[in-house]
Image (tube, rainbow over all chains, first blue to last red; front, side):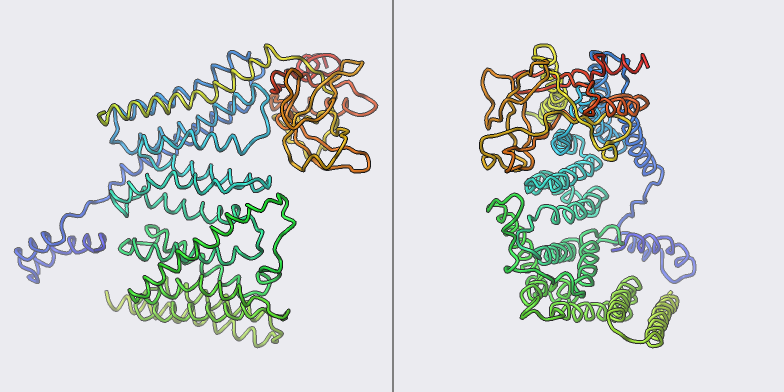
Length: 440
Length: 187
């Protein structure tokens, strides 16, 4: 049950008893039924947030100061200096572990500090000896040395920094056209900690933050780790990935409250909607499929096709398995979003038969986005979910505007349709607001 | 083993690993600087637009290409070893390219670039030897000094590099026979 709702009920109880609506006995029984509500302690939260920001700022400041290049310092002095911030940060971690292991503020800030100081230390050595070049290797070493901090301190900020590091590493390697499939193994290394956090409380801040970061990281990594030997594979892969996120959110995080505490569901839904919109255009469907296989891939290695086959196969199949489970549960929204990879596969196979001018796949996605938009709009209005209704309206509006600019209709008609859409937005929102006011 | 002991053990391993990486870098580079053979490399101008401003001077070492018997033997982006020698002026030259580190001869790892089939040449780049760090105030002045003295007409800029067991470390940037920091002081 919603914590805010229970809190509201508890605040109302004294008045209800006073006015004779409830007996004191009923009040006690209600309280026993719902249990105590743990109030958020803003002061403690502020200490944690400022602690983390303080550590990150100090860490970044030290890195910048070292980057100044103190040329008057001799090599031995520089050597000592390269270790000093690292050793101090390590001492901070040891102190935290043995003196205040329960303090979230200390754990998070000392973890963040140590993570940054590992990078600072290696950078200063690199500067002293004019070591250059291999940026991906540096970022990878840094991230791997920082990973154990996550487990030792049970802290989420180093986990976020680790994800940032390995994502950057994968992107750098893509720039060099080197193999970067190792990202998935590296990302896997953070999952045991995620599992521990999920077990201790699925909706706590730590797993939620990590899930948001994972969604972003995996989305970027999917794009940079596929080798692009088979043009257009990204269409199936990304639709599978976003549907998988959405369905996982629906399956295992259904009871979460609020927008931010449902990263998988909301990130996945946004991904499906944005991609579906993009796929209503003709350009993503150009020159894709087996006929355009990249034999002239720069690396020219046959095994580079394997990660593509695994990624492009496993992710959509996993999404489709979850879709089958969703169908059994009979949740319409899950089925609607879960169908995205199936439609992407169909679209991929009918992308451009016989050199047609306009791809039938784009028309297919026109229909899909229209259905999703209408469904979100209708259910939003029906169940008083203003956010859902607006997302539906936005999907429909985007679709209509895009098709209007594609076609050669005159300005008067276009203007009228825009006005109609604007009115639809206003009217539906006012309607829902009135209904909500009526309920309260 | 109790949980506390396990944490202490893990902590020790992590702390040592975190210290070991910079320490090993220092030891490796110090060894080369102390015991490595000195080579003076000619430099070539680098594209001023491409050069990072401020904190370091972007170096381009000569030679940028090497004659080989068969260009097809070398592939793009391949890491190979350049066997070093000296010309009559004592300036470093690349004698030949090898796929594996040659024993008993000074060599540096380089990366193969584009082929020039007609001239039987492959271009090479010198990864890890393209930066010389300086303070943010001095780096722009050093960079322009470097650029003006790395042309065909004015070739008085050299990079002093030490090489030991295939590992190379930049020791100094020399302009008109002086260390760049001394040269800048005298200007």
